[in-house]
Image (tube, rainbow, N blue to C red; front, side):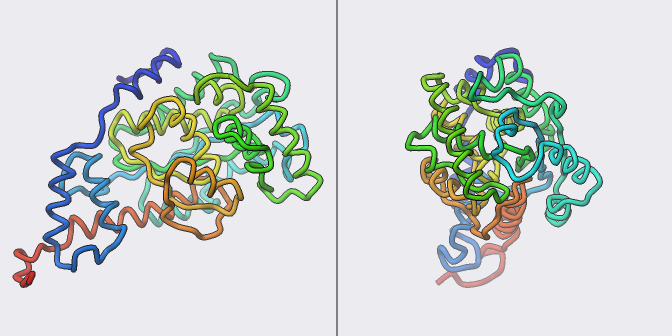
Length: 336
């Protein structure tokens, strides 16, 4: 499948997507058992390598074409005083990404990853979701398709991230709608708002989730409460699933996008691993709800795919050890 003409096309593509290659997974486990190390000595790196091998369809994989994509979008709900920064910062940061001056530029370079930046209608914010659905069907489909089309054909591991003033509010409302609880469970300080702004943000999250209660599955919630950059991340993650490309998830907002897929089709995130747990208070409970264990915990709260890019290095190391190490037979070492 190469294109999306409707949201139902995406639902069907996710439902029809195949799982990891069984023979490659078995072969990778067999190879791991023969490498020159005590069993389990590389800990979770061993599991990561086997997981990656299964999705790439070979028992001895390599990471040759990592891709990082940052999507940017503006939110109508930002006008409700939920962020410490004005909406203009989104466009300013996009320029910074494109000029190579942001943290993600340095991290992508260090990882040897292709970095792509997509700004999505920054002059046309989504609607305030306390008043109406953030996006109509055509708008959310266009954003999802932008993410779907952004995944390069040669990509063998994907990291997606975002930039968008107000998007922790959107992510919190999505989390509340998908997982329940109360607004305070999912609403953090984002870019560093004070107590008064946090209280306002919690109210906005509660209002939005209440207005769109019963919206439908995860993709319907995405349209009602999401942003264009969140929808684009969901589209890219879905395209990776269909293409059997492993994904390293970034922070809270990225995981909100992923959760919309998980709440639409069971197993939609089987190709994903949580790169890190961020300092945003709701990220840890969201990972718990998604039954994911993060690779890193570094107190990050930057977004822009930074935590996922750092975790990409862990995955690269896992695959390098798995595929590059000698077996006991190759090294002439006795395995006992």
